[in-house]
Length: 333
Image (tube, rainbow, N blue to C red; front, side, top):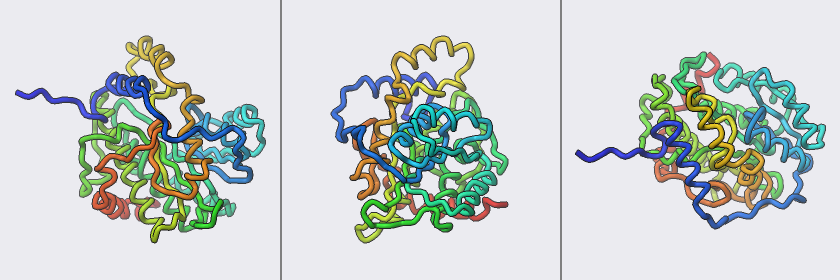
């Protein structure tokens, strides 16, 4: 009998850690250069989800240092993060807006707050993510990774475009940017059952990273389709990009069984990038001139790639869009 091999997105935390270490160890030729420290984005309004720790906090600090007006969209209970980022960046233009992306009512409250204050977002970094060790049901009955990695993002962008929080423009320097922090785990062999999109699926620790990979596949598929729909006739009116930072020593191991943490945590610190080392591709997509005049860039580390064929397929993108429309329409219920 032929032995089944693991695919990206399958397996355990250990499998994912080995893949991430391998990616960092392999020599790569960078196809994009880091954005020089002197490049500024003064006056740009930037919103980042999941800015209370790890990559999100490091990105928020760097964008604030470069002159952005930062909005930290974080789960309740992280009020000190705002002051920490002000201190680290040397900027006072940092504020916190609370949101729980696993609760769609909370997502709508955030959107209401932005709209009521007539805020215009120039750069959105949709960074928040998680990898629970077992399936968790959200208040609306969705699996948490599906809600946080995809559905909440789809709802926010839908609202922002309708409310005028994000204003498409092909005028140089005024094109808004939307950056999705995804993962190479989206290169999964799994297909998406569009007829059952959003249905809760129970799973345990063994299958957690399988469903993590599936949720990131859906995210990359959405980013690709969003870029297609917002940019027609060869004009970029909303620059939509996605990226994978590679292995980052952040909260990746928080759901690891306690017995493994004494082994896993030192490995993360030794082999993985720190959040400050991993921000390069995000800063490029937020600040580089090219990333504001083009759309559909995908970066892994600092290397330009294409998303997986499954995520790139236009028919899949259309099916995802149509299958998720009723979920967006019913999200206020």
